[in-house]
Image (cartoon, rainbow, N blue to C red; front, top):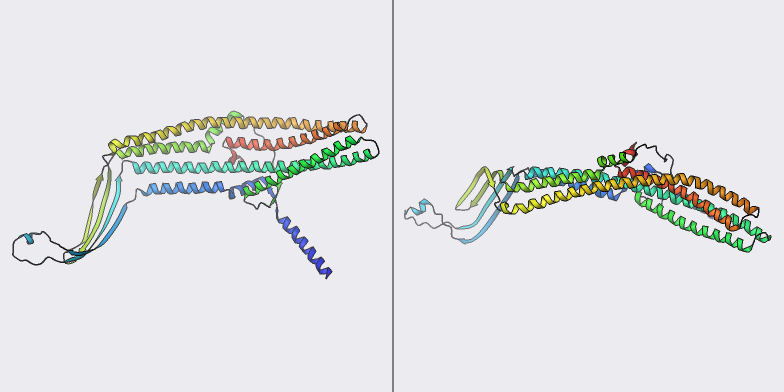
Length: 443
């Protein structure tokens, strides 16, 4: 019996290990980007907007097709007096026959109308819908770049969180070992009790920092899982091979020119302005008459009186809304005002793009400069700790000096790692603001 229980315990332990293994996923940056694009609710909404704009264009095109209306009625009458004023009835023949009794009637109508000319409203409506469809597609591409950039930032944040946990954990192990060494010195009367308490306090503070770092790591992992459409219990193991600083000789002016020509949101607002201009022409078209080719068929039957069949008609119809002469002016002013608003928005976007590119470019330069400084700071902090520790071992430095040097060393290592991740994000942010992100990732 004991052997069976032991076997079951081993089986469930292996099963537990297998489940835990399934909850881990190694992830490269490119895989993360692909998953975020596939599962992004924002991009699904953008696709729905494209479908809506395409349907609106189809509706505008269908206005060129003929309209067909069919109507039919069956009427039930009660003791209706029916008298046909025909020549035979007015001829005075003296035949006083009773009028027919009508108790029911039926008629059906089929009307067809094919627009020939509508003042350009149909043509400009199609033109406007095409521009809006193109603008919506460009919005979706811009949203895609935003999703990619958010994924890169989330990837970098998860990397920073993992690095912080690793560095703080290493520092905690060193602090615990130092506390153990100080405790032995204190027991042998070689170290003051107060110095031991300082070491223990730093160890406790480092342990608290580790708790905060692990919480940040868990939140960053959950955020990444949600972004990629993965279960929130999935632990992501980042594969950062191939992620390195890229040589880029472009200067600020190159990025500015690229942004003005490649930014999709800039092109989208230009399409919307063109659509509004077509809308002005469409509204002005209401001042002109509408001409349509018309046709129809009529059938009617009134028992005991008459019936109509094969009554086919065809012709040309003209309609004109005279009220448009004094009502159309306000509509035109509204449409022209929309064009002015979009023109102003386009100018404002131009200013914003220039500001965004300048900010992103300066941020990148700043982070790259910080990396150079932090490389030296790490070397200096490590050398400083080595010297202070050597002095402490020779009773030439205090415990406070050692602890301060250790904290400075940890801070320098953290700052260097975070600056590298921030520079990576800043470079891709610059590509996004210049409209080059998707193209650069495909290289």
